[in-house]
Figure (cartoon, rainbow, N blue to C red):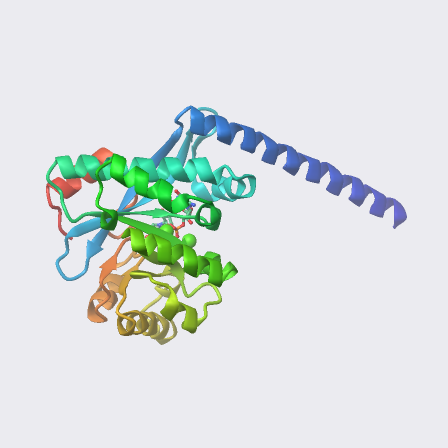
Length: 278
Ligand code: C2E
Ligand code: CA
Ligand code: CA
Ligand code: CA
């Protein structure tokens, strides 16, 4: 048994060094990837459930790696967060989203909102708000055309600090949304204090809205949001049944594969300019 134990230790340390090495490689490649412009934003359309019109989009980052092909954010955002690379990456995402808003405005599209995902580390950065204000000004973007999505768990990590950061962002005039709502441990008293505009129902609550268990939570979140005078958007909508449920319960917006996955910027532009309706 002792020998086995020793082998196990060896196995784990080899495995560990392999993981560490891969992590290091990914980290080195990631900073190069940002410099080499291998990052690409996809835009998933958001649909107004009353009018059926595309009224906004969520920017989702992908890495077009020459060696690995298209790498999804779940693979590299956690590493970018740990290493601090999320700060330059996040700045790039915001700049790119603003450039897309500007190009849409040039095409005559107004009242369109693009949301970007924000990590807690960006929110904690000193001068984040001033920096954001400069980026908006440089692209001549009205602050309320940009929405920042922050997850509930990131906010609840340090709610007092989050509250202060959100208040400054709200004063700047950007829209704020709580992502993955219902999946973290949230405090309802904070929900009321956070100056947010939107809550996003996590797709895990839409699983099977035909079953009473899932439906009751989704309904409760919509009612809670509306009672707090917030807009409610459902994400991960994949079926006709989910859509009908959301319309019945007066959810405000939806996004999901049922309507469209994330699109390249030019395809988003033609969709919005042709005023495609659901
Ligand atoms: P998220 O913000 O919750 O984004 C929603 C994810 O669900 C996206 O995956 C999207 O492509 C996927 N999705 C959309 N519609 C459907 C659907 O109908 N069914 C299913 N099953 N999935 C759907 P993606 O693009 O892989 O992004 C994963 C996560 O990576 C995001 O989760 C977000 O937390 C993070 N992320 C993406 N872009 C950024 C970014 O620029 N900055 C930061 N900090 N995080 C990002
Ligand atoms: Ca999001
Ligand atoms: Ca989400
Ligand atoms: Ca998520």
